[in-house]
Length: 296
Image (cartoon, rainbow, N blue to C red):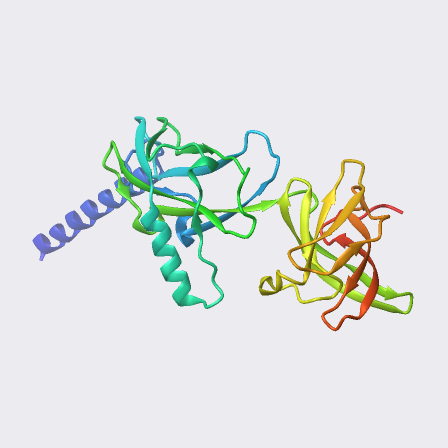
């Protein structure tokens, strides 16, 4: 019996000692258990495959920026060189996938060669102690068709440390949405006469640094009516606005058109001939929904 008790006491002593050592180790910040998670490489914003970014006509030194990230529980101790490529297959895959998911999806088209400066294959370096590197691609908007959705597809090929590549975030299709200070979503009124005033909300689409396109009066703003329902505004530096028909629209500029840059608002005067041959004298007053509220 005495031997049994002695054995039990010894076991309790050993267990207590092990427990104490484990508690001490857990509380001691000097203990280094090493890295707990493996390092992985991926493109930021690539989780949805498609990344859309607004760019402005006339912007100087404009760039498309891709961020390459190294995820790890510890800082990397050596530079990591990551190889990327322009990947048209990624763009084709996106268009096939999204077209199946939605009938209204608009296929993205490859950004023309003249619109960007990037070799077919490039390398970026994530410096030791850092977690990301940027691939900056010079971008030129001149000559782009405002009615085409352009994109630049880029994929990670490899890295010199053989870190794992995250397959679901290895490729990114960067879509460019062109804009200007004169474009956006606007609300206000469109009046046929002092007593015939209609509320409107319209999208002014940027076509260049100083030109926008918008629907006439309260006509349908769907792009399938581009031939007849739209007009073109050209804005001068002093705020004067010239109105011209888009395609085969029947409108005449009546003058005294103005853009208020502080209020981000337009006042437009024009004559519109409908498909019924009825003629309307229109006064439109619209303002950007994102314009700052002015203190009265």
